[in-house]
Image (cartoon, rainbow, N blue to C red; front, side):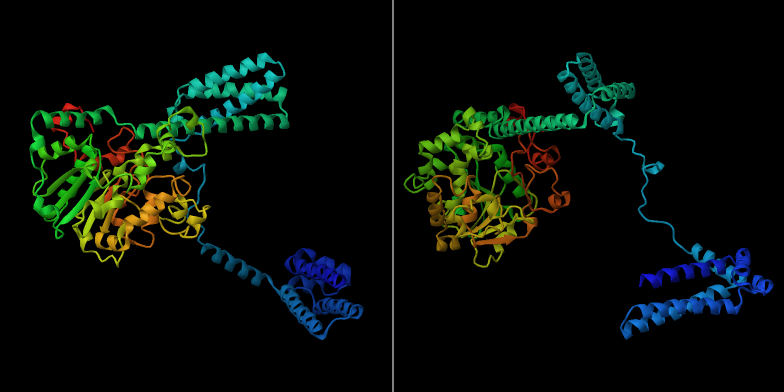
Length: 597
């Protein structure tokens, strides 16, 4: 078909030009055809015999092509239809007069005026409204210059051009002094641009002398590798320092229990009864369990709960602490009674049933290997082991206060339901509706923490171990400790503590999980956890600076899970006020220990 289409294209193009520019090309018809009606043609267009001639020429070409090639009848019919359309178009173009041209032109102008040429979101860096007063263009330029100066300095040193080497490092020092700690161009000192220009001239000179693409790329790759090594070392060092700070009790926080303990025994408070025993075992009341060795944090949990509680006289707080902080905890609540609510403070050492023959964690604690693993985490040999995360090496994960949550029926045998609260939470709403919640036969009511692919079982458990992979779904949704409503009747029926013991015994070599109480909790309450509405418990205030403020405001409980606890200097500043407003800074003991917000 190429032999047909090419002459036709030439023919149609010629006719189109004749029709549009007939005033200027009328003479061409006279020369080509010998037409005697040129005057008429100029006025009314080319004569009909020319149109017929052009059409017949086109038909001749098609006929010749049909003879040259054998085509199907359907294809031949299509070709004839196309040919007729082309002839019609040629005729219309040739017969179009000036008036029609003018009319078409005016219609096009009118139509173009109706176009909406405004494009929403158009952006141009040169428009005034998009100029950023905090632009860091110059700052970025200087930083890039410093990088290239290091490259050329290294090349100069390898070629023994010490003059260029010294010049490059001189400009590097000047540029670093010029930018200092600037984060944008507005922070730059006066004259910084002159330093950038001088550096530019020096780099241009060095480029003329030394530029070699392969050599420069090798130097840049070496610099990237060195920077990555430095970043890795800095991250490792930072992780160690954060973990060390998180598990170290600040001096000021240590002062409070010391002062309270001293006065507890000095003034004879050890013989004073704190609790109303008639309420301690009444299942019709609202019972809370708090296991903590932090006096101030526990007081915030109790205060924030009672501020928002309906019928405070029906609320009973069961606090369990260790032997060192028992006197301080009792002394605090003797001096700061919770109004109409009831407080019980117990010493975990007095739970005689909690011994190594019954408790798997206590048996593990007696193992020399476990002691070495947890209590020598600060040793240089431990720090050099990159295959294990330092947060798994914290002795708090073997504290019995951390594992007492798995023995609720043993601690509170006469209760039907109890709300477990961690000591790093703040209550912002009344929690009593949780006791009337229908948990559908589940043991544990908790807020799920999985979002997309995060915080699912495979995050916490070792699914390469067949004992885990055969019994659990790696995509099962994780949930949070910190605010959990436990149905103790269902707990006893399902023998939850027995399940916990079974899996703790299997994990004696730490092959199933590493981190303390949440992984065994996920296993123990697998398929026995009722998901609560997320508004009951919002997490992340101890590690995530991007928690949604609206979620925090609407939460019944906010949780400072993570290393940045609100009583530490590490705390995220914008979250600290939620906690500190429940601390009375005018309190005698707090003033004595010089606590500050």
